[in-house]
Image (cartoon, rainbow, N blue to C red; front, top):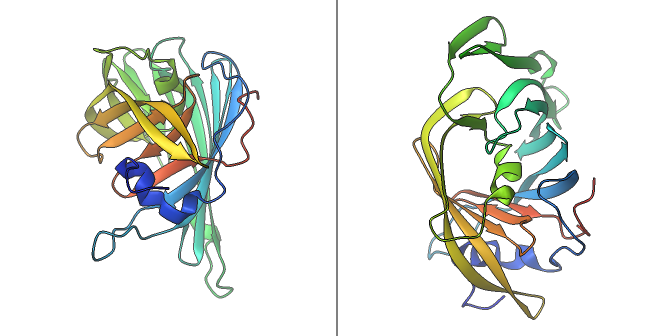
Length: 244
């Protein structure tokens, strides 16, 4: 990877060794499953990229149902979330009902983490969002909103056209409210991988409570990379298409 690479790709540096862009057709409006490697991005003195792989994310879309499995490693502990969202047939795939199972695993045998396991769920009733965790609570639903994982299915359906902008509120893990989000198309950028140059399409996301994030899509609207200043999701090197 040469020094002329865009910053998001340059930050991954040697982690891109052996990475190849996916093959096969991809229909963002159809059924598909994609798997991503999660990377920590921790700048070191001098601006060199630091951090490393820290988990994985798998997202599958089947009609208006999206299934998610994300494992995040921190030290000797891994937190795995399995989620299922049933969505409205709209631009944001607005959640109608959902469930989350969260499990903790430790490589340290004397550390007991079983009691940390959680089950959460939610649903929309009328104009309210109802959350269930240790107890039930509700709040008025924003006019336009979605869950963070669902952006991997929402962004691919946006057109590659100047002026394309999507405004909404975001709920991280289906619950933590991050209002005032905006995703806008910013154009094409060239990257190089395996000695080959590729033209990718870029969207930028800004909003309260989140780090600016850039979404890199191939010509078929498949998300190859979603990167902020502290973490990145890179499509798995062995991906061969988008069929579920």
